Length: 112
Length: 114
Image (cartoon, rainbow over all chains, first blue to last red; front, side, top):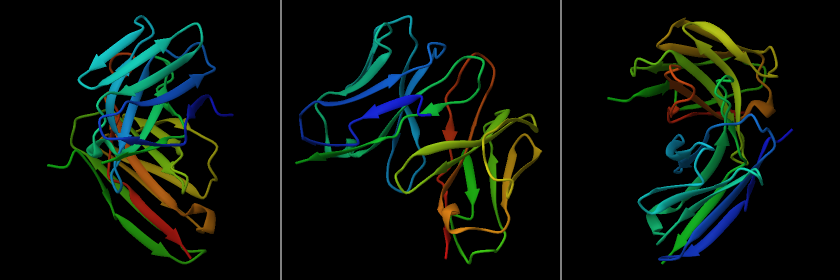
């Protein structure tokens, strides 16, 4: 059972454009929603995270938008750069589970 | 200094063999994990240890056996390797204090079973 559904599977964006990746979850007990970034040959690394008490969190060019009623959250990358080309994973967790459930990943390619 | 280090980085072996992957973290974390990433990049949790105690054991064949000699180390032993075991295995760690925390991953161990 896929508890966190992520789309699209892959995304090509021109340099300077906006990249948008969407995730939907089923478990209403989830209370922590991070995004991880993975470069080829490396392990995933935390990019940005949000809790459901806020609807948006921004860190530099990266923004998470969160819609609790729709059980959806998304990552927006403004002014996308070739260096942003990587695989992005959304994830979700409950405070007591100690287990991060990942989405299926989105491979982002930013072209010149 | 590498925060979460895994060895070896690459393993190539024949079906039926046994292999081990070692993981060490120097972050002072009390919780460690093994994740499996398949060819489609899907990340699936396998095991988690907190202070040497097994706390998460997902539906994983019992050919996979984790061992945590202390809270800084988590090893994974795989018996009777099968073709479907080919994947990248990631070790990760974090501090369990507080509700949630950042997960720090190693660079992965790519296992190829021929």
